[in-house]
Image (tube, rainbow, N blue to C red; front, side, top):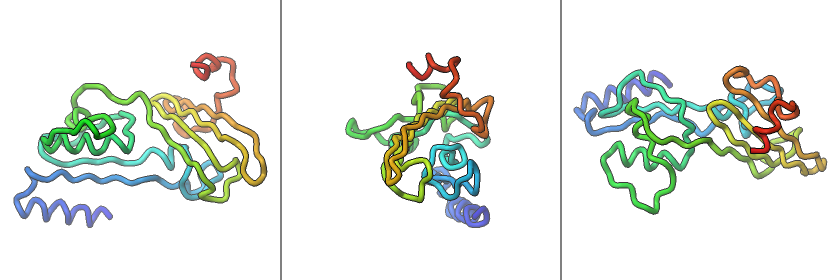
Length: 180
């Protein structure tokens, strides 16, 4: 994959198009590979949800990073802005081009993740919703499914527990955060 991305970049540069081309490398999900006892995708854990979004183009400095919570709807306004195209009012999402340029500006407070159907053989129930901020991931299994499973809440501190090994949802210390 690296080799082919390199070939693409070399072809753009060889054609003299590097000042007119934005290259984006991303994915729609990661894979669990056994993490948290799960395989495949369709879950809110970091291994599946925290995916690369790499950009190369004019006015995008190399080596800059951002921990902004990028939602799928933010991609279009960001690319339009980077391409100096006016963003139509009908376009959803937040322009995060300032993040790509290494600058400051408004960012989404969270990313919303969800799975609304039986996409895999779940042991925890079929339907879930999650919010991820730079600091926390909060998830709710809505329960039900063929085994009529109970509702289940999870809360992880992504900074102090990046492997999301400790569910904080039942701890009194986090009750106010969960109520907010």
